[in-house]
Length: 193
Length: 271
Image (cartoon, rainbow over all chains, first blue to last red; front, side, top):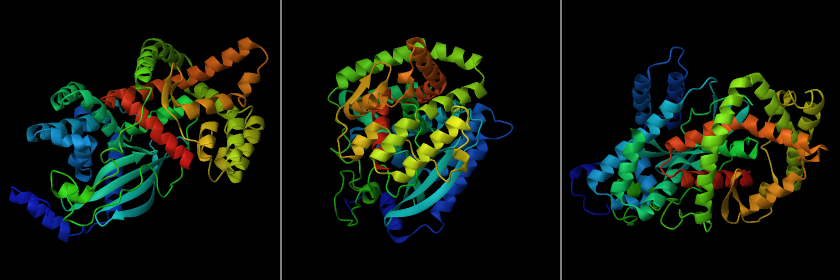
């Protein structure tokens, strides 16, 4: 398509992406995922922190594509990382997003989620709107999905106008304007420990 | 205000709430059809070389909304801002945090909620005037109704009695948003000591709104100061918690905060 792929796998993926459309209703799948996350967070008998992290990771990684999230968060800086660094970055960033969130969480009141419209952004991209109501306040939460690995997966979440990917892009840009990929990986490693 | 933790959606939610906390009012949002960055036009043609890595990723995202040049945040005061951010971080961590913990431990949740309601109600005039200045007559009427009903039947605003009967509580409006809706640009991003993030436009707005805050018309200055301190303290547990959430997830907390402030304010101006 763009360049001759070195390995046959990406080429195969492109073929798949071009020819298939995900069968399941992406909004319904997303709704189930969000619901499972809430169920786990509001369990009557809370799991141990390790169990909770593992469970959340399983639930979230089935619907969220962390490689796309990580890569878009790096933007044009992605190409400054070699293949090994890229893999390490995706791994660390995924852990940061899932674990900080699982760690710091201590909710009492379960929020209500109201699902809104699904809007097609392109042939293979869409967004699902939702409102999260917590303590009488409504917060706008928009999920952006794309067909990745032959199914609809989340590649960004926009909360009250603030894009998760965009927010981290600002941070990584700032760190990488004076620093190296190795330094960023070091900072991330310290952060997730 | 109730000590409700807001972490269920991951840490980005904290950004929005942190801002809501600093401005003393959480915005209530509708589902606007386009929020956040405008959807980027997708390059449908597969032979278009969108990036330099040339795989399915570029095929899907192409020149996305964060493409080169568009994502650079203009921040002429960055040097000053980072120093102020550092100062605020220090004050939050070593001064406000311990005081706030003490307050949170001593004052029961229900009292914090009533106090929060009281000060939220005092924000009524700002919201009534600014919704009107933006020509949002329905919202302005609702704000007026809230203010009148809560001030009387809600015992001076301690109880929120108007809201449950409303179909929708309008999003909070302030002068910064009004100026924005009139087409005035946000100006440079600036971090003020103690007050936190703002823009030049929002700073002007804050001064304007000052005249609509009933607390500033309290005769005895000791009472005025007391009320202001109480309001600030009462918001502080939530503020500190949200700030710590943001910090724990951030690689560059200053950049994270700046982005969150600017984006959520832009959204607030749009709606």
